[in-house]
Amino acid sequence: MQHRLVSGIEQALDWQGPTMLGREFAVGSLPDPSLGTRLLTPQHLLDTVMRRSLAPPQVRCVRDGAEIPSREYLSEITTRRGQVLPMVDPVGLGRVLAEGATLVVDGLNRWEPTMEIACRALQWWAHENCQVNIYLTTQDSSGFALHWDDHDVLIVQLDGNKQWEVRGPSRVAPMFRDTDPNVDPPEEIAWSGPLRPGDVLHIPRGYWHRASRADEGAGHSLHATFGLQQRTGIDLLSWLVDQKARQHEVFRHDLPLADGPAPERSHALRQAATELMTGVDLTEYRRWRQQHHGAARHVVTHGLFGAIEEVVAITEFPPLIELDDEQVHVAAAGRHLSLPTRAEQAARHLLSGHPVWIDDVTAACGVDAAKIAHVLLGEGLCAEVTDALRLGCSGLVPTELSSNTR
Image 1 (cartoon, rainbow, N blue to C red):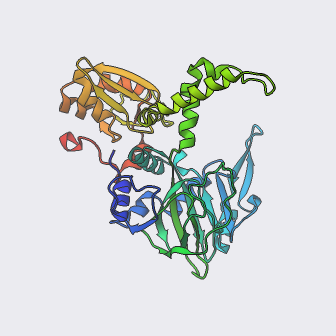
Image 2 (tube, rainbow, N blue to C red; image 1 turned 135 degrees about the horizontal axis):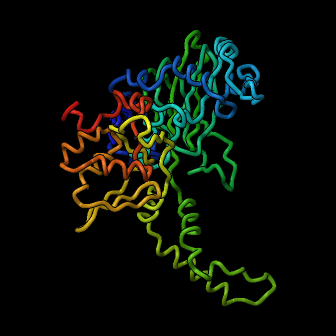
Image 3 (cartoon, rainbow, N blue to C red; image 1 turned 90 degrees about the horizontal axis):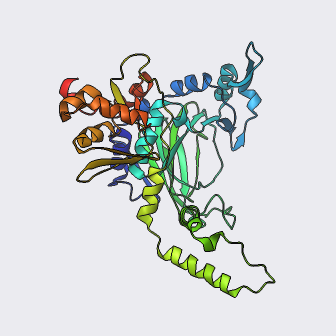
């Protein structure tokens, strides 16, 4: 799946793929700074949050490290049937931003198509889960105090300017659930400076950082923080327990009583645990995780409003497509399909992550792509390209086979 944001980040940070993700701090600039405006503008953000029923922590306002009471920018509307819905109060939010504050919108990718597709492209690229949080800071306000995240982040400055300070980690590979608190930042500043439209920061997990517009005066800053949660040894152990250990009887038995003699049971447990760890297969774990991660929410019409002509893959990770002498096997989003071998190229086009016109695939591959597309639609691996998805891809994700007939 090609996406201008992914290729732009690689060029900005001089990366070849995602192998440097989480390894060291990096800063650079997108080759095309206007990409930020294509992804999101302040006006579009405000228009989007105004039209949704939202409440903290989905939407928050922060000023100088402290959260502003939600009553200043949220209100409740009551429908004629008495249902009460929390909504952003446009007047109140406008007042808060005019005075100087940071509007934080968590997980915009869950309900904004451009960010949904950008996050999916980053997931296909990094093979890790991705969520985007948006920060709109106005006037000379600062946001959160010096802090660290339990995931790697890629920060893209979309509009305006903001000053950043980055420090190294004070604990190696800290976690959200951890045995020791991680509350003392190091004194040394690793990097500080302004971010301008098109600039990119990579901040690995555990690195302390903060951003502010203090002393900047009138103006604003809009940036997107793409958080990528990489898997750890803890995740691997959890998978081993759930998917492997439960298969063995020795792990399903009750533990011996503290005051009861059962040395043979303890020995069997230790031996089985050793064998379990000795047989760890990281490739198997990665493949299992990606193939069992459900597909994204999507519109399903079943052709009620006309023939489905254009589709796009909506699996959160790249589908696994393998060919043997008899069939093409597709595994993704908890589904395992088998198709005739002649369907291989059509399936690869339809599952490329790019919007594709079914007729173009038929012409290019010499098979009835509509039949294959409807199988993939029925299994939830592809979705009909709606107006919103088309807009979210336009100018960012190339349309497969578009040079053929369109």
